[in-house]
Amino acid sequence: MDPYELLGVDKDADDATIKKAYRKLARQYHPDVNPDAESQEKFKEISHAYEVLSDPQKRAAYDRGGDPFSGGFGAQGAGFSFTDIMDAFFGGAGAGGGAGRGPRPRVRRGQDALIRLDIDLAEAAFGVTRDLKVDTAVVCDTCGGEGAAEGSHPVPCETCHGQGEVAIVQRSFLGEIRTLRPCSACNGFGTVIPDPCRDCSGEGRVRSHRTLTVKIPPGVDDGTRVQLAEQGEVGPGGGPAGDLYVEIHVAKHPTFTRRGNDLHCTAKVPMTAAALGTTLNLPTLEADLDGAEGIDPEDASIQIDLKPGTQSGTDHVLRGRGVPGLRGGRGDLIVTVNVETPTKLDLEQEALLRQLAEMRGEESVQGQLKAAHKGGVFSWFKDTLNGH
Image (cartoon, rainbow, N blue to C red):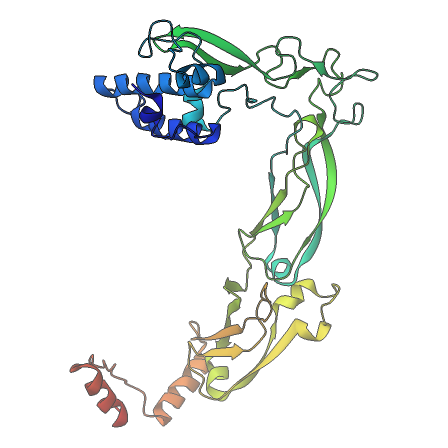
């Protein structure tokens, strides 16, 4: 059968067009994709057609009307390279002697590293600078990352001649199948180190303890990761270092609870102070860093005026006294008042409270339960307007 017709190309098609057509058909009829007998036979036909048209001498012989195969066009040709089949699926080098994958580099980027840093809430809110002790791979000073002993250098592998891979030829129904595998003599590098560096054993890197200074920005939260570029593991062969990530863990605070950029706390006041009104002088989160750079001593405390008759559960919102945001702004400080009822009274205190209860008509108070609203939103709105 006409090889041009089999591949669906014109007789004046160039090599690139022929290869493109073969790739498309090989993907369609390859036995791994279509295991039926008809597809296998079709695959052998297009493979033979490509062998003819990809070889200038065989193509010229066919164009002159000759038979490029001794056993006819449909017979199995000798010397057909499986590289073309693999090229159709994996995009490798095609027929004609193109380069393979080549040697893999000895110098590669190092892995990223992760370290945990424990800080308190005030440090997370306003930032802190810490010295961290890390254990990572660094460039070997003895060989400068090359991996070879002083006075020596890596040399080309004699087995693969620096290619990093060797060809394996096997016989199959398609003829000779040629595949490329990493060279076992040099592990695919294409070079060998005859005299490795004694300090790094040819790796080009060694483990080392070192100290890094990390600046934690204001506003970080629990679980935030701070990236230190190129401070991680140095790569094999002295390759560029990966990044170091510092994962922040914020300890619980005895007074303040953080919710987003807002701070929440509870202020306990006696029943009498809530009834009569008072002024509370409360320490702020800045008090934990009192005297630190950038912290105003006047911000270490704040006053809150409680009006007479303050009820338990009342919130006082102090704008802009929370945690600074990573992208600017600052949250609020919400102080919830908790009115404490005395549990132990002496005789005089009890007498005074009974006298106050008598004066207010509260000697015997019946608890009142307010029924749930019925009738939906409009009923509730009506009750609200009527003062219920």
